[in-house]
Image (cartoon, rainbow, N blue to C red; front, side, top):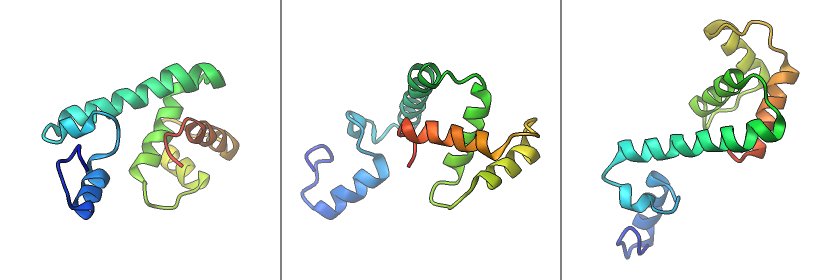
Length: 115
């Protein structure tokens, strides 16, 4: 509540939901483009420094496409089949197995990029 200079806990919680809880983000409330760049940088760091080396991921572009699909569908239920259909329709990935998609999703979950 101190960060958002609010005494009303309801308003403070709304600010937290809207702007996030990452350290320092409260200073960037009026700069949404910088916040977006910070989040993108954090995601790139997790992918490039954590997930790719740890899991020895070879197809980085596929991982990014699956992550983009998951982010575009936050709040919606989806399955490996939904992702495969998306990849078949919107990308050059035509023969991706459900096992591959499930494996890549598990990597993203292990990296806490989504639950």
